[in-house]
Length: 121
Length: 329
Image (cartoon, rainbow over all chains, first blue to last red; front, side):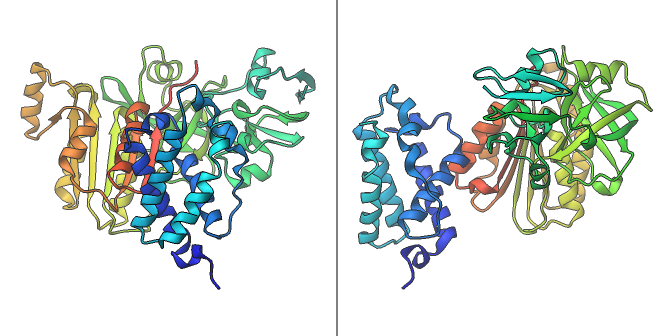
């Protein structure tokens, strides 16, 4: 059986999802200020790796820097509400691409599982 | 603590020091410019020792495998034996030189051996004493020479030397080419947006000539911005191209419109827009989904416009940005 990654259209679909997702993130007043001076290419490559992994595609995603990568944002007030917002926007992006709800939920669960690392808990 | 061996001497690399820092702090002259891992003028070659991925970021694969690395981005984790990269340098001669406006100098360089490049990429220009600066290429490979547009900065060592001291026949060296800001010719129907400030016009002019020469079919919109009218250049040439090619649109723009300049504008009998260039872009072009964009010049504008275009629906991989970073000294 082909993976969900293949079913939704492989790399082009993931790339499009990542771009759509970041357009939402960068215009969402709750969280956009955390992204003022990020390297968009790098950030989106990481996100593409994450999505490819949870969709069962070929990947070399290593989430081990989740904790380290967000540490500097804690002093800027990063908290649960911001993680909620990110997961909400990710799910919204995936639904707009007509990805089945159970797959969206599955991806949201994996994102959810990084919460404590993101918030250094 | 890692050490580096260079020309028979061994130096210890202190904490948080790059290879470039270590050499400079020990009085070794190493050419360098942006110190941000972009211009590649501080490239050295490691003959022994392993290199970090970050220290080779942006280099061509052929250079990576030979052990070339960016000394300003290298925090060595083990001992290195390094040599300079002079064998990458290509001798050039200045064969033409003139002013394009009151502070932009044009020079034409003839290269002494094979050199392949795309218009819009940049080179490092190296003076005999090692002084190095990056400039974009405004000419096509078919011309067999390299045109540069050089902004003369008040305390610019290279630009002032080129404008006041360097004469025709002067020998220099170049390294490169570097960068992915060029016309690839793969999507002839795709609309192209080009936005540049100051000498950001140099790569755009090269890319434009390349695209028109390759019979690009999609629309091409070029916005060139300057503080005031005297900062614009190649205006007549670009208006002529816009007359000749029905798919090419040229929008010179200035931030300030000064009264004494209105006469010059009237003589031109053409419109020069007034206002912030990013606003003009969005006022002029309403939908940019599916476009390719080239953004060159002022870093703040380049980064901000890149984000604005992305949010307006342009795919990030269709945005080629070349921010002109100032040299570190």
